[in-house]
Length: 400
View (tube, rainbow, N blue to C red):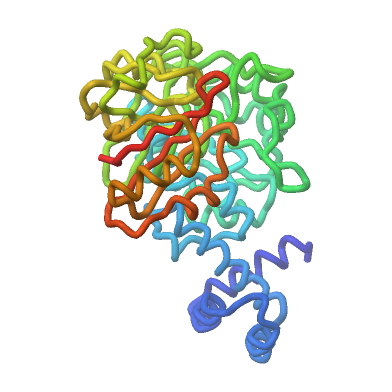
């Protein structure tokens, strides 16, 4: 029996009803506690205990990103697979575009990992075949998504012609041997494979959220790049090709219990934004990170009728609060040169309590300043410490 086949056999045993107690105890155990691990090994093999601890760690990671079906506590995954998997919000969002454009068609989920995207596609009514070169991950995908699976090399599958004209979702490996996020040209499978599969059929390629055309050694193929944030954090970019592409670039904000919010257009620098004077503004707003990442801040300024305070600040100013869902609003209370003592005096004079520091470009040490500026009052404040050219300014505001 091969090593991977033996691992699959171990995981199958772990997921059986007979090992329910082991799974529960492993979920409560501290993997660094030698005594706790030894107690688990009194009744079970070292391989089974190791898999149980890995499953428990993976589910802890998935709870933070997965609220779909199946629930996170029922997903089968190893820690690395959990880290690389799409969150439930992005999985459902991408699957919805497939279902609207290509209802009920076959989708090959290539490099499927633990099957998070496959699960979304299955729930959206697509006919899914998940493929991964790792037999254990393919097995996990089948358990999690309930779809057909293949264990094998996606390059060979493409060369054989078996994909035909079916559409695809591709999730290349985005980490190197040290676990770091890597550039587009270092993805596995790489640009040559991505170019070929995108040229021949309709599909989607999951990319690192830092991807941008014109900045690396190789550009992604033609198509729409959609930058996606989940719960206020950038998580992925998606290259949509052929029938699935709608715009040059788009930005989508996903939050639990809310409809997706999107903006689209042609990416442009901050010079396309209207400007506003921070001294004369009553409200400042920060955009969801997907908007800036997509280069669409100018589109959001036009939609929300705001102006940019200064290049690189990300602050959008207005006389009135904007209710645009992709903006967070703050009522401006004071604007001054950044000096800790001066800001602290103002906060104390205005019943300041908890203080949130927002900064860029290391204009201030966030943790240090939050502690230094915290007061005994009952009013929480947000202090933006930002560079305006050579000067560093503090904008004291209340979050709406």
